[in-house]
Length: 282
Image (cartoon, rainbow, N blue to C red; front, side, top):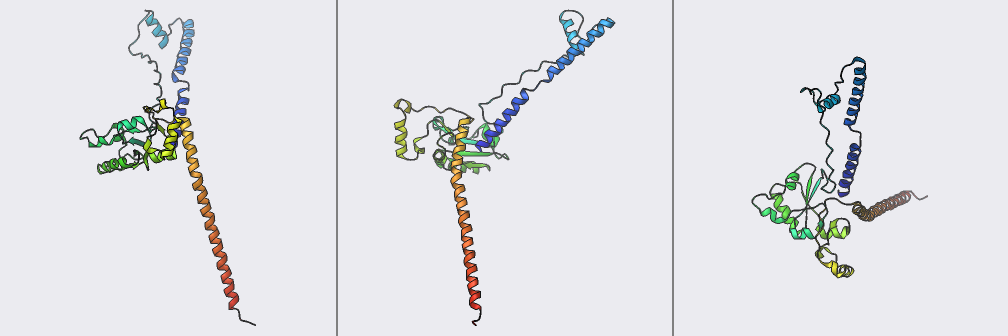
């Protein structure tokens, strides 16, 4: 889902850039006005009348010659479009990722594009939900995903939210612990919690590989979009996970076909033996 959302967002950005580089209508309007004024000037040279185009009238008013009619409207210059935000959340994202751990844990490490939503928010009597949660609640085509380190906090939050009417709620299976095991790079920002590491041996290796000055806890960078390198790493991990499953499915299909063929050969041999034994002796 992350790869699909990122690819769709990239295509939309490319289309917006193409549209922004197209020639604007104001240029054609200006050229039309200039050509009209030029024709009016040529006509005025032959007839001796003044040019009454919008541009000439405006210039005459500025220079103090004549008056601008109230009925004549000057087209306002088109303001440049606001710069497109590329570091915010994906537009029209079909999922909302909520980190239900404490804010301190979120600041240390979290999944990219995740919002902080501590479980203590649900104990409030007023304003229990953020703006994003209200926008995604029970909306067709959108889902809300909860996660923590190992599903214990997320399951409690999901139970409470389901009792309050949420119907499009999901839990990230295994939490950060399983996520880091399957995707060691590209999915999270900040140092992964020690409870999510695979084994004490890997923890010791991780500590020994990092200098002592860098072992201090650093705040995770709050980012809403994945980089191209992170998306490529996610794609590689997905392919590595899918290749064994495809091989196993092919092997199971081949074994099933071989069993069926062997069973068919046994059945044909037994039938032939029965037919041969049923013939009378001469």
